[in-house]
Image (tube, rainbow, N blue to C red; front, side, top):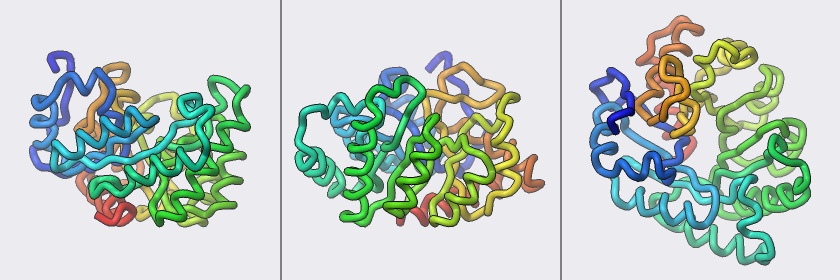
Length: 266
């Protein structure tokens, strides 16, 4: 907590649609952190990456009234279910989905940044979870890193409702996402000087098709880039979006809040 920074907001105007509060850097801060966040944050969706993080996320959602969770297998964690029958994977996720604080299937998707050796396994687990989301009628939280073409192809095939988190594609790809009725997630990357494509995406995006997120503890916005991120720092991303769109920070936060509640039926 001593090294953590917080936004100047004194009203709960923020909904963080994507964070990882099961990470030890945040989890270890306990009640002190969540008490501080409650001053400016109305809602947090803490996303899971494997069955262990599903359990932790569920516990956090049960403990703090403004926290919700999602259940899913992240593409970097597909080895955690290697050897398990796909029906078992679906059964375990279905059990988590029945919890009243579980609002989505995620974080799921494709990641070709680290390795392309397990692409077929990633696609199998991704498609299994997309199929499950359709069966359960739940939104999905999509991870897409260096896999734009394959991700878009699978979204077109399954047509889920949901969000492509920390969107890193072009304005043209964003338009394809909107056509499918899917949202894009805007993270602290929008404040980075080397974010070449994202400002153009923000300029053109419909204001009813974006969510704000931190991906905490990662991707802290400028002026805290490289530090531990937390949900209150969405303020700085909203401020940057407001500059690009010519509207107030509070208006950006309100659009994002309304969009998040609509997507997750809150």
